[in-house]
Length: 57
Image (tube, rainbow, N blue to C red; front, top):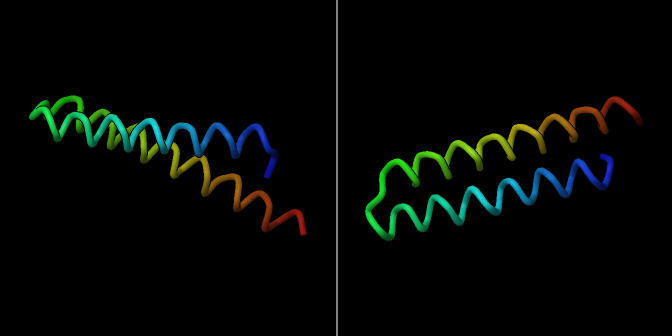
C-alpha cells in the first residue's frame, strides 16, 4: 500500500469518526450521517489498498 494512500484513508477515517461523534454529541443528525459516510469512504479506500497489496505479492 502506498504510504500516501494509506495516510489519506486513515485521515478520512479519523475525520469521519470525529465528525460523527461531534454530530451525535450536539444532536446534529446530518453531521453525524456525514461523518459516518466519510468514515465509510475511508474504510473503502483502505480496503481497496489492502486488496491491491494482496495481489502484488
